[in-house]
Amino acid sequence: MSSETITMVELRHRYACLLLDAYGVLVHGDGPVPGAQKLIRSLNQDGPAYFVVTNDASRSPEAASERYGRFGLAVPPQRIVTSGSLLHPYFRAHRLQGLRCAVLGPADSHRYVELAGGEIVDPAEDFEILVIGDESGLEPFLDVMNTTLTTLLRRIDSGGDITLLLPNPDLLFPRRDGAVGMTSGSIAALVEAVLAERYPHRPDLRFQRLGKPATALFEEACRRAGTRSVVMIGDQLATDIRGANAAEIDSALFGGGLSGLILPPQGPRPTYLLESLE
Image 1 (cartoon, rainbow, N blue to C red):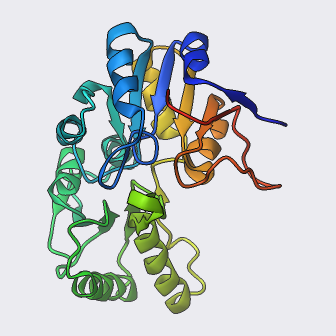
Image 2: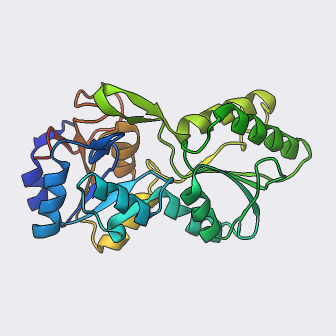
């Protein structure tokens, strides 16, 4: 299937709601993506409806809104759907409330777990759930990881139950001038490599990936929008486009982020190719 090249103006006329990825579409590590400020101003004034659908689990919607505001992007908190918000329904569905949780990530990552009903404990204490919320706040990285891995392996060796949760499965995020940064998905992959080496007969010791490309984030955005006449605009084939395809909604690959607009022979195909936010 070939992907149609489309403009932002055409997308705004075809759909009742736009779903916008945050990193790589609206912002990079140091500021707004070209055209993002004008786009958000126009959407706020003339529509259509939109939601920022992000794998970021390091900030609450309020904190994310404040940060976007510093970049000239007036996105209200109620228009931000984060992967951290998926922890609450996951805890409820799997009856995890009240269990001891080690959380890697900054204060808002901890807050998401508290709101879900988890009891936050230090990674050096025995824990029943490990949540890798975000890569920020892990300095010094090796000290945090060594402590967390030691406690994790002790619990598994003792026969204790363990749940591994990963709101944000992204491996990389775009920074300025083509640089990239490692995200929490890369940290989870490191932990899984350790577990696979130590417990080769325990394929269950893997993280439950809640954010994109899993469909829960898209379904929540559609629920809030009140329609499935939506299009997901993202910059990564592996998360944004693959997830939109799995959720059976249309997608547009934005060329200003990690994947670019050159599609590999195999893999997920977007509905559209979007060169610019203008």
